[in-house]
Image 1 (cartoon, helix red, strand yellow):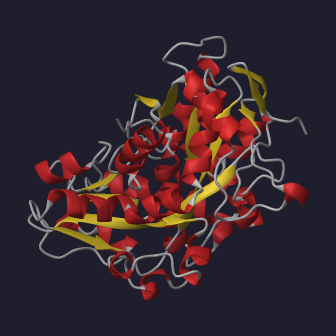
Image 2: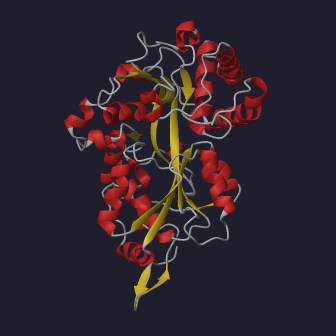
Image 3: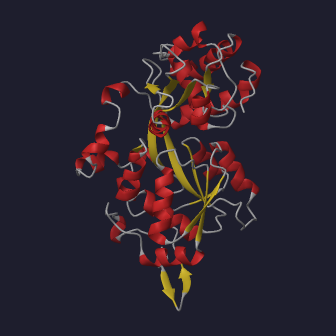
Length: 372
């Protein structure tokens, strides 16, 4: 392990495991090392990608990071999917300019694959010990940040009776109404939506959920109910996509943002309740590696974790924060009741990888809808 030192204004050495306490113990409330803060400020910029301001409270988190450290956040393509983020790293390996992302926030299956391709660099935050082992790479190349479940976001001004389960989406009353919040050929959210639909139709058989999901969306497309448009708050409000299948935290955030115009209902389906874990990672080619590490320290601090929760995303340190009574009661009251998540399925990494392979390769042939 190298020692971080700043001497005469120069960064002499920055360890990939900055923030490790003596003996490898990570105090949950540990502050980022002063040397890291200084090195990040010297770089002066952080480049992010695929972080919409209404996703998991990222708008407030970015503003808080800029204010706290005086580091400008350069935001690339907020609406990009996980696959787009990986491609952005590949396309900018030799680029130190503003189009090269420093950090990524991707679906769980994209973390290990990006590590295998040599696209990530390891870093363990000060609160590393409080991140569940099952949700992080042991070497620190990627680590879980938050999770939610797939739900139906419904424009209640247009839809008289909201669908209660996946099978309801096939009803004639939802013609030209159902959309996904991403392209299932590249976006993790949409890929997992296909899996969830298949899990529901296959009566919980996880081994066949991906194929069953493709068949479900093929039927949805043939019935005229599927809208091949990436659903967003704007398209929901305009009536282009009256029903969007998306993570509950996005739907709940839209409900707040739209303020009743239109009225938004968020329905967790009765079956096929699939939870998705997203992960953070730093690009191996990050132009601003120290700013990237400081960003990770910020996100995994109490402040960052509560910022995600304020955006309706359950952060990885959620149980710890609740146990320590660090979550404001008013914030807890805004979250859906725990009963809505009963029976939620957390697909294993192997299942997610298998689903990603089947869905991305089979969508065009089986479903044939060009989502854009």
